[in-house]
Image (tube, rainbow, N blue to C red; front, top):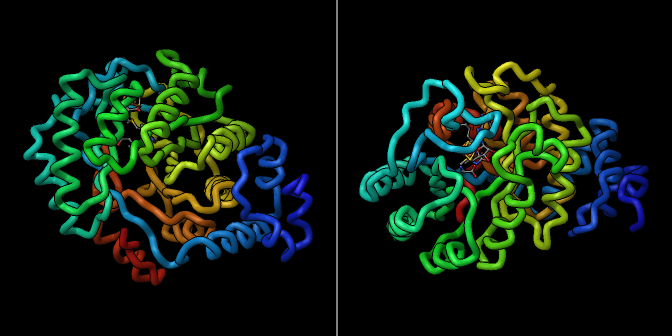
Length: 333
Ligand code: SAM
Ligand code: DTB
Ligand code: SF4
């Protein structure tokens, strides 16, 4: 197929032509997917979704902030950067036993993956040793493990693999061009280097980004192009809607139109047919209808539990009510 967008006209041939695993996306092709009539885009994305997944099953991950705040990086969206006055109280690395208690609680409430996040630029050796103990202990509970603790060297990734880590989350956040506008303390290439170390260590990659930061559709397309053109599609792609935290430089960013967010999910599903696409941060500001549309468009994972890292997430009971209304089930792992 020389041109994906041409091939998807007219439907239903479009859906037959889409859904191939490709690593050679060009921005123009991605933009043509974004520009499809909404119904055509959703139909194509949902068809691809059904081909690879149970459309009524959603994977649930619970987040735990194992080290909060006082981060030296300057990510413009982040409440945990030491440079912004956001009211986040810094907390040192958690004791392993406390993390285990949180993981047990998450498991009891139905989570299948436990994701531990730290506000570090990169972990120090001593910190990594403690994180490794956490990974081993959480895995022993029968949960899938995920970590997001900043940049990793190749050797650190190998150590985490040996500890049994299932996923490493490291977001590329936006397009390479927009990245420079939101973070100055590290480069897009730094992110790619860590992803390579994670892939080389044979750990599943979880990488996505944030929309609603004032980026253009071209930037959203560029971000998805970078993710899909990785040597292997990430196992999980979190799509976060910016949580506008007072005190951060992006506190007043213009909101992204909900339908544009749904389009972003649909395009991610079309480009990475076998990837878990996670409807991530920002759900407290989304209506049930919008979330339902995201699940139809191909999202099949959420963060579950009343807190993300430092900001609010929907109550568990509210999510379970939504699942019941939509006839969705929690995906077993
Ligand atoms: N410090 C590590 C790092 O940046 O890689 C790990 C933790 S960091 C908080 C994980 C991710 O959370 C970021 O890459 C970003 O995509 C997301 N994030 C942070 N603040 C956010 C916000 N206000 N809204 C949406 N997503 C956010
Ligand atoms: C991801 O893509 N989103 C999560 C997780 N990976 C680590 C984090 C969202 C953070 C939202 C802001 C906060 O709660 O501090
Ligand atoms: Fe630090 Fe991560 Fe927040 Fe950036 S996103 S300021 S690296 S915690």
